[in-house]
Image (cartoon, rainbow, N blue to C red; front, side, top):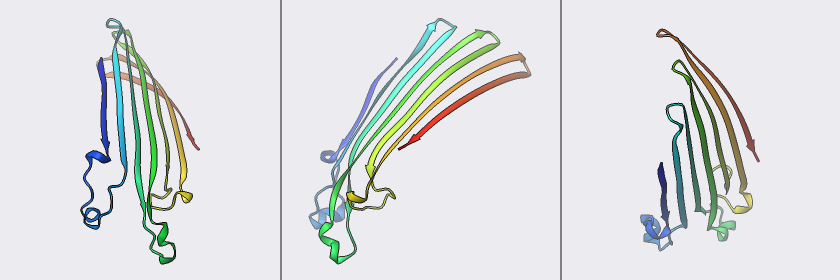
Amino acid sequence: MRGPGTYRRNTVTDANNFFADRDGTPKPKLILNQFGANIGGPIVKDKAFFFFNFENTNQTQAVTFQPDLASILPLAANFTSPARYHYRNVRFDYRISNKHTAFLRYTHDGNAVFGPETGQPSEPSAWINLNNWSDQFAMGVTSIFTPNLVNDFRLAWRIWDNK
């Protein structure tokens, strides 16, 4: 078993950009928290095994909008853009015999982001909510018929939802 791990980064621990510091512009907001853990091991010695892990990333960062038109220059500002990412994996392995093994796996990958659609800085009124969810299922059977003949059968199914 591996214990939980975490990674944190935020505005307090980051240095300001050289040019922003020179101009007296404050540091843009950044809050980044990543954490996760995994566990795995035998269910039945030398026969059945499992593995599970999860990872989460929660991030809030600043997006700087600096318009190039004088008429909308007063709209220039730093806006916060939150993002959440979630990953999950579960796998079971089973030794049917010395010549046959099988596995089942489920993977989930999800994220929710509120920010500029094109990656270009813009006002929040032009931002979009991105919610992407991907669930994947896989199974496989490996059979050793002779030292020179191995069959590896795999079947997978994926569900993708983008809102």
